[in-house]
Length: 368
Image 1 (cartoon, rainbow, N blue to C red):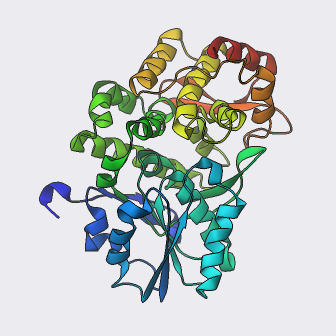
Image 2 (cartoon, rainbow, N blue to C red; image 1 turned 90 degrees about the horizontal axis):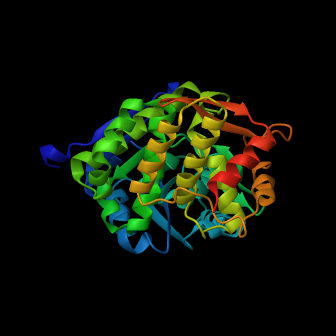
């Protein structure tokens, strides 16, 4: 690699389960990125119909000298396939190949592939090693880091899963060049969220550099991915099992998950729903008297510049009652009470129960 492409390495400090996030363009072809991983006779690359034709050969070639056998399984693309049948295709391949408890699973793709591969790794023989190789912006800055794995259920997003930390995360920034603009925008939602919940200075930086990040300019993109991973790594290290501050990472997600479930998986991309959800959560925070209208306006403006929706779907398409139904099966709900990540100021958040009447008011104000 050239000096300009020396990888950034962000540690996730979890004691004897510590691992590192590698960030740079060209890592798929960089031998150092694949050294020091768990040893095994076999490895399995899990990807999907879109990503596998682009990058599976390169990853298999990189792994060939480390594993005697490198298998592959190709899943259908999309949130609608984050389900039991797709998960079973991974198990079918592992069992057909007589994979043992040392077999290493490599998740090559976006958040759906990463979540399902991680869940398969957590379950197969009660746990096998996992390496995340995220190829979308959203996965690189969020879902590949922290060990949360899951599939969806018709009644709720990510409700069936397990915590299973990877051995490494390898973020090859060059893979983002093949993403459609809509997917880049969706990933920016998860970048933006780190500012309001934990880093006001990063939010300021994004206001200045968002266009450069959106255009995938190398320096800006590297900083955005690095800083996002640093914030998430710090929060995960402090609260791995989401007993406290890790819930802050779900800023905008309670509203967003309701949109995804209510509109049908895949109708809105996850990042699009989170983009609108962050604007709604900011407005809820204002209505609670925690932040001012100017802060809400800044968040809405940045989400809009990212190419994301700032309002929920029309209430004739997804009623307030339907929103509330999906919110009640959100993982943050407790004894039927609605709980939301709200902002106490720009750069600070907390999780709190909110009266249903105020949620209804917010939905009415923030949906078309």
